[in-house]
Image (cartoon, rainbow, N blue to C red; front, side):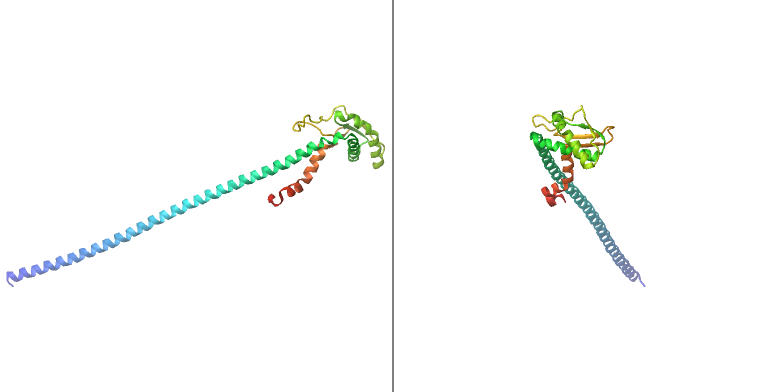
Amino acid sequence: MNDADVSKQIQQMVRFIRQEAEEKANEISVSAEEEFNIEKLQLVEAEKRKIRQEYERKEKQVEIRRKIEYSMQLNASRIKVLQAQDDLVNSMKEAASKELLRVSNDSKAYKKLLKGLMVQSLLRLKEPSVLLRCREVDRKLVESVLNEAKQEYADKANVHAPKITVDNVYLPPPPTDNEIHGTFCSGGVVLASQDGKIVCENTLDARLDVAFRQKLPEIRKRLFGKMEA
């Protein structure tokens, strides 16, 4: 084999090696690009997941805040409604309290009422000796029916007439100028055993409080109906 043939074979081998190298390099390049694209896609998907998760987290926070705000507004509205209802009910009681002040204006009817309250108190106490307290302005009226009340109680309870001492300490007076927010008494009596352990408060104001408490559910139902629920 002469030099020309050797040179030709060498060139062929060089071309083969170069071609193989180029093909290998091309394969490496394609593989690297595929791996890059896969990794890039994975990174993009990971970032998308993070963005979605962050969005969902913030969306939940917004929804929670919205629910909390709605609940607070709803509670505030309910409180306002309840306060308005309470104000109306209290204004009714105040109006009734003002009406009680007129009861003692009719002397004849009030005298009969005092006697009835005294008899009722005696029947509750069932004591042989009691202390009676009234308003100073009612003292003469109370004393005028004292014996009648004692006798009526004795007849009903089938006992001896009790001893009743009218206390020199009086119940609060009626309010002046229709001012009913201070300490006052609209009328009636308070009876107690001599040792003070048993007390029967039978003032008009106490009777109103009892009646109002007993009738409050019915009053609220009539005024507000199903709104209470």
